[in-house]
Amino acid sequence: MTALHYEDGSVENCEIGIVNGKVPEEVEKCCKCSVGLWRNLTNKTYLLAAMGKNSERLYVLSEAKTYDRLNTNIDYGCPIIANANLSSAKKVSDDVCPPTHLYNIGDNTSRGIVIAYSDNRCYYYIKNPRGEYSVFHWHEVFDADCQNYERLDVASNTPSVPISYFNMCIGELFHKKWYFGIDDHPEYQRSDVWTLEQQVNLIDSIFNGIPIGAIVVCDRDWKDENEPYEEIIDGKQRFKAIIDFVSDKFLYRGKLYSKLHPFDRQKFTNAQISIGELYFPKSKYDRKRVLETFIKLNIGGTSMDKETIDRAKMMLYNLE
Image (cartoon, rainbow, N blue to C red; front, side):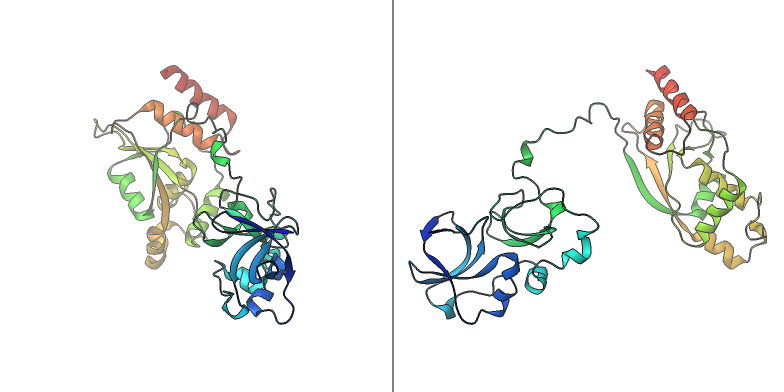
C-alpha cells in the first residue's frame, strides 16, 4: 500500500503501479528529481506525483481518470527542473558551496513542502502553502520553525550607525573642502601614514575606474566660519591622497595635477566616489555618536592600529 498526499492535506492509501508504455517528455525529464508518472490501481486513475522519503509515500501533482486528461504541463516554477532535472546546479555550485543543511522529500520547510531536489541537493523544488511550485537554492531554505529561534542580542550592546551613502564626483569633494571646509585630522584620527606608493596607487585606481571605498563624513555645528563644516570619520588616508594630488604634492606618471591635459583633469574630477554621511537624529552634532561610529567602522578590519582604536575608546569613555 502507498499513501497519496494531496494539496488539501488528505491522504489516500492504495495500490500503486508505474505506468508502462510511453512517458510524456516533460514527465520523463523530471524522473531524476523523483517526479514520475504513476497509476492508482485501486481507483484506476493516472497520477503525476513525486516520490517521498520512501516508496510508501507519493505527493500528487496531478490526477485524472484517463491518461489523455492528465495535466502534465504543471508549472514547475523554474526551467531548471524542466530542462536539467535540477542537476545543472552541480556545475554551478556543488564544488563551491556544498549544502550544510539537507531536507528530504516531504519535509516541511520555511518555504513549504519539499517535492523534489537536485542530485547535489543544491536546489529544492518546493510547494508553498498557497499551492504554488517554485525552485529554491539551499541557501534560501530553512527549518519550518525558524521563526521560533532565539534572536541575536545585538541591538542592546551595538550602537546604531545610521549612515546614508551616495555617489559624488571628486570635483564636488574639492568644492566642499575648499569652500566649506572638511577637517581631515580630528584628534581621534591617526596621523598621515600612507606611503607615496599607496597614494599613487589610489590615484591610479581612480583613473582606471576602480572603486576606492567610501569616505565617511559628518556635519558639524557650524558656529564659526573659520572652522571646517564637516569632518572625516573614515577614509582619511584616501581623502588626503586625493587632496595632495590635486595640490601638486606628488607626481602621477611623471606629471603634476596642474600639468595634466584638460581632458585628463576632467576625467579625474568627474570620477565618482562613494560618500557616507553620518546622520544625527536631532540634527545636532553628537561627539559620542561620532566616536562610536569611528570605532565601529574600524574594529572590523586590520588596517587600523590598536593604539588609535584605544585612544578613540578612551575619548568615548571620558564623554560618558
